[in-house]
Length: 123
Image (cartoon, rainbow, N blue to C red; front, side, top):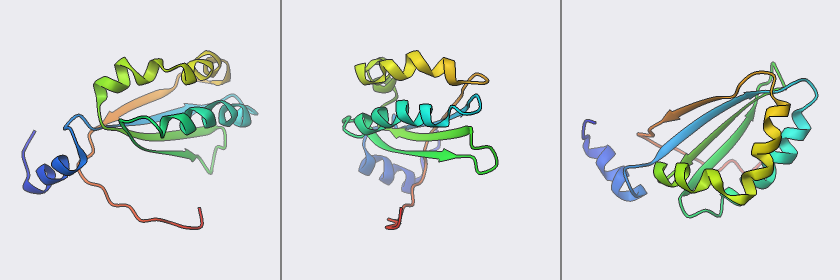
């Protein structure tokens, strides 16, 4: 990894260099949108209280309402793999998700290098 002065400052400010973002895309069987939201909402609500959680944004494809993308950022990849994926609050989600999918989910891992956010009050 190249060491850029601004990136180094961000890493010191944000915590360990193990920050990781997952982009997860799921394509559901038609009519399963509400079931996904019912399963995912408690997971997202619980995740936000985890010490290594940074943020998550759930998106729905405007052209295909049965397709969703979840963008989530964590401070420590090892913690996500070894601890977070095995939390009890995820159990029902993991058990029921395969029944909702019309194709295998896609998971990509990204390393954030810059962040820019503003608060959009009308959300």
